Image (tube, rainbow, N blue to C red; front, side):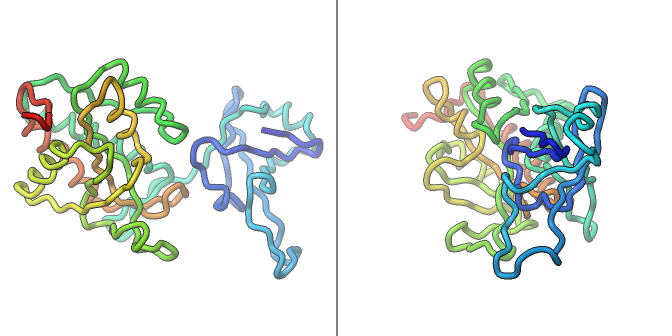
Length: 283
């Protein structure tokens, strides 16, 4: 967003990136010349005023790429508008916890791809057309989902995203509801969720002994479900969420069992949808 005369780079948020995790992180700056490495610097503990410490904010964090001034930054190929990412890699903790940056919502893309793979490998012939889509720009206004639903004009939409595990510190389950990784996918109850479609999903899960949890959302779901549900005069939509810890950090964590059960839940639900089903309340 801004390069200072002394070569420090100030940034603005892209999507839902959390500025509070930035200090001391290594970053990749994507330029036409390739990746340029940098670090989010932060004043040493010895130099900060006790009792008056400022938290990291977008206007006080900056990236140092080792340049002496603005001209050297630009000579390295870094300009205003370059996208910056964290290079953190994928890890497995205690055999069944997946940890990585941007599991929200790369894991969603993986799960729906696995559903498509299972349908193909098991030679399932569905009595309806199926689109498996991975949308962009959900974090800045559900823009990809809006484009998808206007292009495809679906009759039904089953959406998957992540939701908060509320068992970690500083989260109040009385406000956020109780959700725990490893206890199963989370079925949303919300204005955008169509009841008959949701009931089909929960009944299918019970029949197939797929564990699941429930979450109540009083207004928007904050996911692509909202874009689908209210498009084209209304689309029967449902939301199946993957429990996740530490959302929008570089150590997002999910449970292997939950990933597998989201895949099973969507797969088995698709096999239950009959030809011509509209999920109308008036049938």
